[in-house]
Length: 513
Image (cartoon, rainbow, N blue to C red):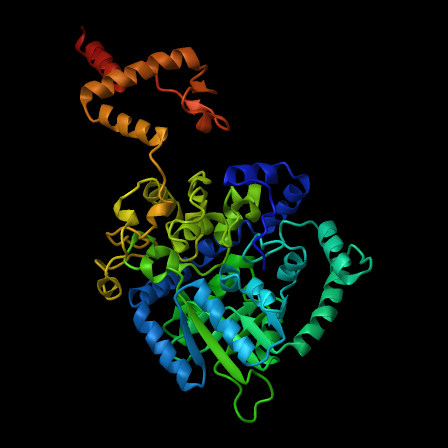
């Protein structure tokens, strides 16, 4: 609901330091341990499912415009009003126009990262409309005036005692430090909000193009209340959420829930196909679906198109050693963790989060965990380069989407192989590109020196001499010019003799010289 900075600091590094120094935050983040191995279990027991899900997502992206056209035609045939929003501002304007036209006074929201992305809650509140988050975690962070810190468990950064304090303040009475009691109070309070609401707002986990079915996955039933009780429903759907067939849900849903929480299936699975029909007892009188672009289609045909395959399961956050240490608020972005480090700069066209890609050890755990086989670690490396190069192809206008959306695969994909990047660059904003730095100049100089055998031998020889001064037992704790690297890790030093020298000595011994 809010973009208030929860952790002090203007950079990722400063906010991370504040998070690490907060003992309560560190205690709360240990709750991630129970989800650490959920994605691994999917990979071990259902590798074929991962391959199938990955293939479905790439099939969608290969003709995204076509699937969206088919979906729009189907939705409109069911009586749904479809809106297209190029930007978050456009999406907000659509919802506000509907609310003001229909005299909406109160809105209940199901858990949705898309509505967080467009700052919908703040916009409605500013217009004098009461907005209530109905997912318990989202409700907690809303009344605490914070941003969700995890896409699946928004309040995972808070301990039970802190949550009790927040809810007790809202209740105006002291609530017991018991999960069941807190949930019971929230259930009773939110039930009244559902009954009074004029509009329900949801996101969409998937929307099937062939049937027009909107799928909302929750564990608390709040999504079902939002879609069945209010007379108006608005669904904010990022364009990549479309899927070709309703039958695809048979593999998409189990992989999503198992990767997210380890469940075979979520507690509540709501499917909405059109507004309320004659004779039906519940459902909205009006159903509006907003196709949200927000720079997504500009990524088609680029290396970063892979990010549009993401199903928002949170698996990469659960295994990321950086996220597990600093939490979601250190990113100061709607999307956190490995996927957020990539999506935030891309969706903002390089205007926001340009320091996030560097907050990674590049260990590859996120790539291994991803149920749709997105090469997250590789994309982080590429994004670092694109964000640091002013005037590079990465800052150019988006490529022609006609060829991007109708391309054919270059070869038959083997199980577990992953997907090749299209040969193009992503359209990042030129203003977001980094300036030339000492580090960039240093790497360029290093590349030129090592481009010649003489330079390579001379520099490696100098490195071995320096190692004798700085190192001990083959490791160095502090190296001039590499302070950022050796602050938290030791640097392995080169061997005392080069491979060529050792090979020459071996040849000399064998020849008897």
